Length: 424
Image 1 (cartoon, one colour):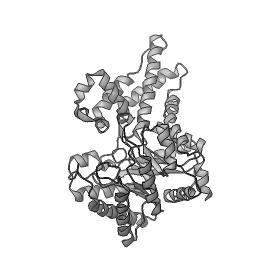
Image 2 (cartoon, rainbow, N blue to C red):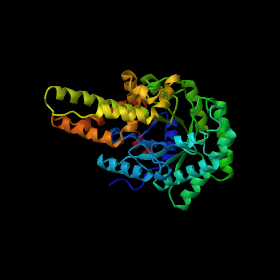
Image 3 (cartoon, rainbow, N blue to C red):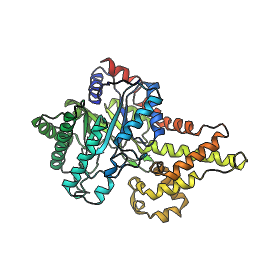
Image 4 (tube, rainbow, N blue to C red):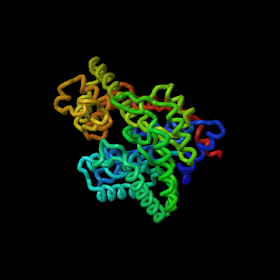
């Protein structure tokens, strides 16, 4: 049986800040849940290494069907929560794990932003989504009203951001209390490099003003405040300029107000930068597309194995996984957010005619097509062909995903953290 009660995420971060006072530093990973395989890999590792898990889902990934649903396994908030419980039970995991809303708020679905929804309608949809989060047992809600389509490309307007942030926290707290649910944490701020919370002065101004507004309404302070440490993900690389001193300054500032510094876009980071995260006192970092890319790469390696088996007469008919996954991934067009320059506007048909470019885009966007029915059918065919030759394809995929997670677990000093948190 899983524990019926657990330490809240807010309490976990509070205890991590206490551990910092004794000279013990760790950085949690916010894992983007791209698939059931990733959930399985995460739970197995967390069980072995004794650290808390945070699963972060954007509204594009997981949301109510009435609001457009999500591209990850077709999960809505409740089926996402249910799937995570199932994977935890399968792994016999009895530790801490948290469901987290990443980038909740108005205009956070691509369609809402592209349609330039009016403020009132966008806020109403955000509240509807948050209510579904709360009912499904989410532990952390990111309040992010920074994607205003009428202000794109401009410096973030802190007056508007604070006003909308407070309104949304007030709504969520009223719903949580009305439903009789335990405390949840909130994450606020923005990782935007254009006018975001990049300097300690601007960061503290935001915290002070937000704190004053929240106190006036008797609302809780957030658990995390996002700050820009220099991270930036493009294609399958970390192209940002991670800044140790800026990270330390921001985390020190956040701790002064009893909250943790949250870092976004921490994919594909090198060991040196990751090891320095502990000394920079960053409490949590988000990693998402990297793990989706690793799963795609695992499938493509298995396709190579399958082709070799076919060439040697050991299977009758190979799957069409590579062909189908490539086509479906490119047609999602979700890869555009990871591209730079003129490549952002490339036409799908032109990409499909260019084998080198197609392969590059498949690498960064294969995970967007994992839930496609034809893709799932070809994965099944692949596994069956491999099984005839004593190869467990699904286990290989899970172990392949574990590799980059393990790097972060070790570098970010996560081993044994759950036991330390629970002992305080």
